Image (tube, rainbow, N blue to C red; front, top):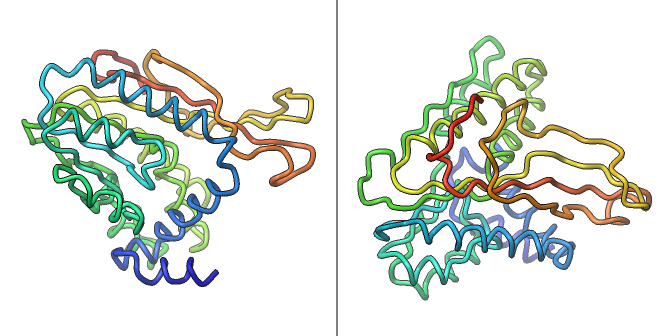
Length: 268
């Protein structure tokens, strides 16, 4: 508990990210990974391998950008650092462990940024129940011709999670929160297509409630109705194993990888 408090107080983080709950979210992932390390192992390795495979399509390897780098649990950082002139890790909060890990790589840069580019406006809008919520139009790295590879790594479904919870605490109507969530997801998909280079998308798309016999008893769409292009690969992530929340049910995630989003087209 003392270590968690120390990390909360000392992690570099904007006031907005603290207020909205992004720092708590990162620290929560660290705790859940510690509790579910073995159950998460296959998912994390398959994510890393999907990135390694996608990089093979890059004819040039100047800059690689990782959106949603988090704790680097699912990022093959050593491989990316060896393959590209520069690797840029992007997240709204970089945990202390990431600052320490990246010290060994001269070509790795940390960028602290909200990839939706709506957090500051959202915090302001939440003060006034009559003020409309912001529309996401992210531009980060869109005009950088040196970027040869981008991966959005297990990020898409998480984009609405923290702000939606914050808005619910502020008593915003569910319909308004859902509309904002859909906008974040659609805007991120559109944003990925506007980025230069090879662009990989890895995301969970469904939450699955699984009984003790291994049968799926409920499915939940966590992309608010958005559809993805043809998937390169799919797998199941044992997100919450049996007995962690319930002795009767586990909660899995259906994960999809799209190796190069820009060579495929779809209606979102």
